[in-house]
Image (cartoon, rainbow, N blue to C red):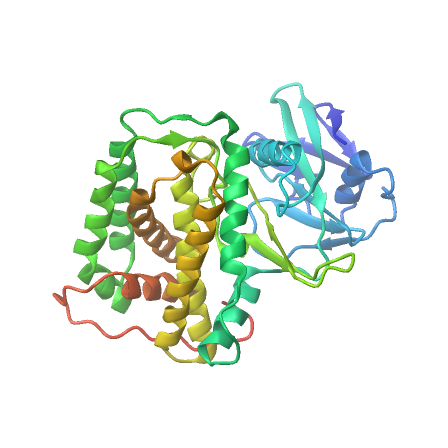
Length: 394
């Protein structure tokens, strides 16, 4: 069920929502938060079983661009922080729901706001909450640690996840179109700019390792020029294991459930870039890189560099890609020759993100890059080792 609200000032939950001059959605002049009563009031407009006055609200504490609130321990309300920030997510989830795709966050409805200045936009996306769910920065790391120390065999989820992504892509590619003739050169320019930025912004031992691997990274980026334009469509855009929830099976199911979430697109790009159709290979490249990042986090948790973690990552990546290819009924959607360049770009993007916003994360893309690309040894470099682990961060 969808709902529509109207007005320049929006009374909701006893408060007033407004859009400021910068396009920020504000509640009485500040950002919306769990406990304001806004999330439950919005949820009630799409689900009559939710009490707009008394349903409990609980914040989702992970870092997010928008504001996500758990309502009544069964619904998630994602409220936009900026006008227009949920248009993409709502559109793709509606398309996936119409196609009957499983394994993605289940859409209950959207709340749209008809604004006299900004037009009509999505204010909130309402989806099911999965009790007991953990994202891949927890459950996948648990698995990687267990495999590394010999406590378990390789898990089967890489194959399962590969098949799920193929199903998602086929639904989103119902109206796939040929990329412009200039797409290969545009891919090179974007990746090269990201790599140059990473070189400029990454210092210390990580910077030495990065610079020693520039020839390999630059060759991967340059390979994008030889690719065909191919087909493009609205992909997930920010697909990594942190966007995959694992939750207990329900209704007698014995196997865990894996659910892909957050179709907002890559937050490191502006709205125009996020909304642009892209190649299926970009989603796969991001996901494969995240397997390497999980291996790095596992080694941090273990407190040592351990080749067994990356040996597992090699096998998991191969299984994920095999599952994807086995399930993809439209092979023309996927060009494997793009993977090397897109993966190099994503590693560089992770380093830039760490330099700008999360320095403690630098070790993970540093580890993945060191593992995947050979060193020229032009600069003296230290071997990669994980930083000390702590119980409150990846």
